[in-house]
Length: 158
Image 1 (tube, rainbow, N blue to C red):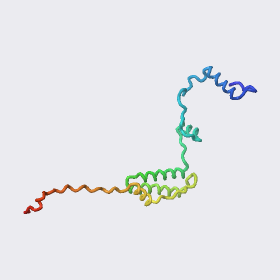
Image 2: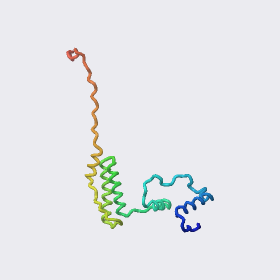
Image 3: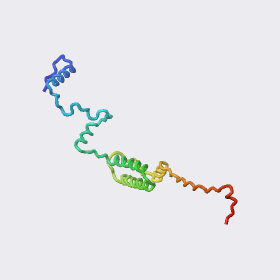
Image 4: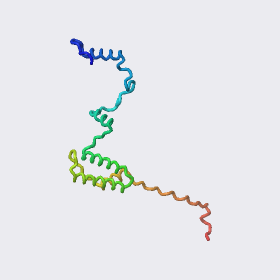
């Protein structure tokens, strides 16, 4: 334990002296992470960073309340429908999430109010069509016509 701050000494000066003396004694030599950048340096500040770090280090996760998890799943489904390969796939994706939304309204899911209605399947298909216009196939060029000479027209046939 360190000594108490003497009266009349500026706090910052006293702390700086404590740190300098500890460094002179070698108290900071060989610490893990010495010379390495601080973790998270340059990343945006998150208010609950320490909770997220603790959950990550313990291998735990914090499940979302039921209504928020369903909202997240619905947004992911809309994204997947926009990237689908066919109209049938769009209909399948939107149909499946609609069933889950209806079931979510039936159950008393935890969390804030659901405020989520089933998606309009036909509107999702129209949006998909707008993003994926039908490419008309260009017809193959006709084979070149055989040209006849000037007198070829007048030849007798037969």
